[in-house]
Length: 396
Image (cartoon, rainbow, N blue to C red; front, side):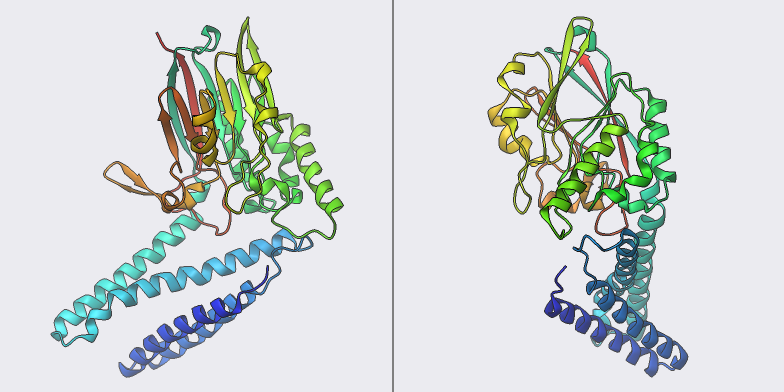
């Protein structure tokens, strides 16, 4: 990845200024040893940032272990400077001619907020990503065939297996949880990996243990097309992409590449539509609905679309189709969900109208799963890894 050295220089300059102000305050108040330790840590952290930003993330030859190491180093940097910056902003009133006691109180509050934010960030790093929440949803429809009344769908998304290196502990636990729920089908809505197939190799056996009476149905996400690494040749990129598709098939998954798939119970049918990633903005469009949802299956009574990117629901599915249920992922809720009095907020709402949970328009529904793994930074603040169980009911 090409380094934007100007942006890096601005970040370093701002943080060095903050550190200088803290160093001067410590020195003036007689904390000589503490000021020396602080200065040493500051220099080390700037070197950490420079090292991390200079790595060639896009190269196909960069090892996943090295990439994970850099991700962690960068995150350590930000867990120090984000709380520090917030604390210093809150302490600005101490520069005003206020009574000494008031200044001391403001300083203590600012320090407490900084420490609390540091603790929250690290709780979201070492605890939350390795827990799971099971969200249960019931949907009713008059068009659901009777044989599928009570049909249970386990919906998961965005594993990003490179998150875990070669440690299969968490993924094994997720597989066991899903199997214990005894769903009729498991639907995976993309982003098995972050960059390339080698991330998934250690997990092939674990993934093959997923069980459902109608199997595992999967699609690809934007990260599953090898577009996030620079390959020496297009042929190498193509081979790696095929290897990822084959890995899922060898694990016993039904991978749908712009294809329909019909499940039959007795004489009733349920249609699954496997669409490839719907590109918008900077994302390449791989979706072809004319193949995924051909005229020959549009007469079927109840239709479920698997589409990684929820943006397609509002832009294309609602205005152009009668698809009953769309299952998506992709947003991760930007790995941050804050809850206030029963209401949820995520920075993902700045970009996505539908970023997490259940949405509907008339009889058409969308469920956006906020994912299991992580990408970019190794944290989930409030955004606990999600397993969704959707139960379909025949409306009277």
